[in-house]
Amino acid sequence: MSYMIQKAKDLATILHEGQKRKEGTHYITHPAGVVDILKQEGINNEKILSVAWLHDTLEDTIISYKKLTNEFGKNVSDKVYLLSRNVDRDKYKTRIENSSYTVQIVKLADTLHNVHDPYSLNYLSEKGIQRKIYDCREFYIPLAKKICPSIGNKLEESIDNYLKIFGGKKNE
Image (cartoon, rainbow, N blue to C red; front, side, top):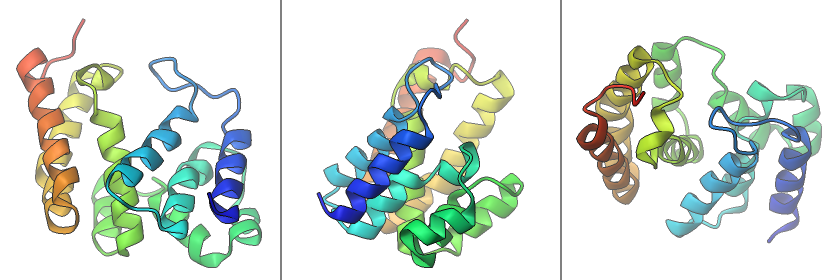
């Protein structure tokens, strides 16, 4: 592992310390899962994997954009910023659509990790589940089919599995 990737992993681990995902797992398992998805796709690019480790840090931790820039440079911190949900859904999707391959591929791996298990949507409300399914079908899957078809296929399979099991409803 390169120095930069290790540094990103270490910082993400420190910053997400004590945080849990809604299903109760340690938060760091999510960036680790995103990195694993990218590696499974044969992506070993230092910048992409560093951004993947850090993708939720500006949004979910105390680190500032300035501090992240000091640690990793403007190129990495700008991409982490673009992945932060600090605008509404439509503006966010437009931002992703108009971003670099690095931002897009990390977002697709992030989305896949968030829906990879049929039970992973159950922390959402029924409206949230429907919105996630819609966003995947109308935005993330078509984007993935353009830049990484295998992620697109996996996203499609995950959403289809969810619908087969739960029919689009929350599992109570």
